[in-house]
Image (cartoon, rainbow, N blue to C red; front, side, top):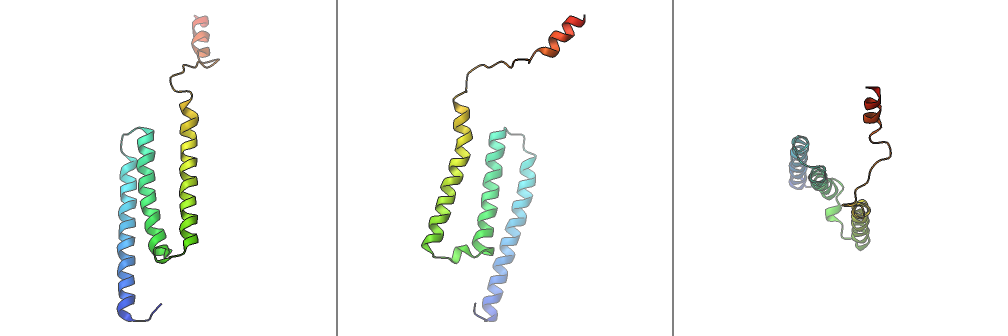
Length: 118
């Protein structure tokens, strides 16, 4: 790290901009929690916001944007692939039951008890 005052001021200005962007992202996260959307859309919105904020932190505060290591890029790519697989596994396990009507064994137990009481 060089010691020139101008370069230090430039880094501090960048950190302030990123901190402001993270603060705005936090406000957007809170406002998005009040949206009346389905669970799937809500999770998608939350993941997009969280990914954006995490990438800002990783690129600027962890200085990963300045790294040029091939192994770092490979490990980040593998992490993204494994994350995608973990997100898709529940979706694929649900898709084999879509449209199949299933009744629960004691779903109407309370109704039958109420009818027998009369």
